[in-house]
Amino acid sequence: MANTPLTGNTISSSYQGLLKTGDSSALGATEKPVVDGLANASTMTMGTGGVSFTSGTVDFSGATVSGLPDNDTTYDLSSYGTTNGTAGI
Image (tube, rainbow, N blue to C red; front, side):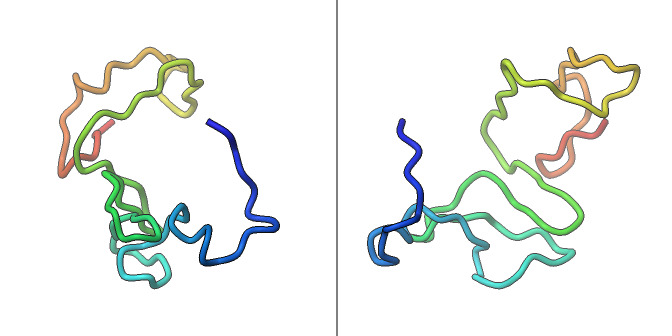
C-alpha cells in the first residue's frame, strides 16, 4: 500500500481518505465516532480523554507498547475486563 501525500491533490480527489469526527466538529470530552470523508464509520471513537474501539480486533503485533505496569509488554488484554469496548487495565 503506497503512502500518498496530500500535496498536489485537489480536495475533490482526496477527501474520501481523510478521517474526521462523525459530526464534523472538534473533539471534546465525549467520544465521537471516527469516519472517513464518505462517512464510513470505523470501529474507533475518540475524544479528548481517550480512544475506544467499539468492535473488532486491535492488533498490536510487532508494536512496542509502553506505559504498562512492570514494563511488561506481553499483556493479553482479553484477560482484563472491558467496558463499552475499552480495555480496563
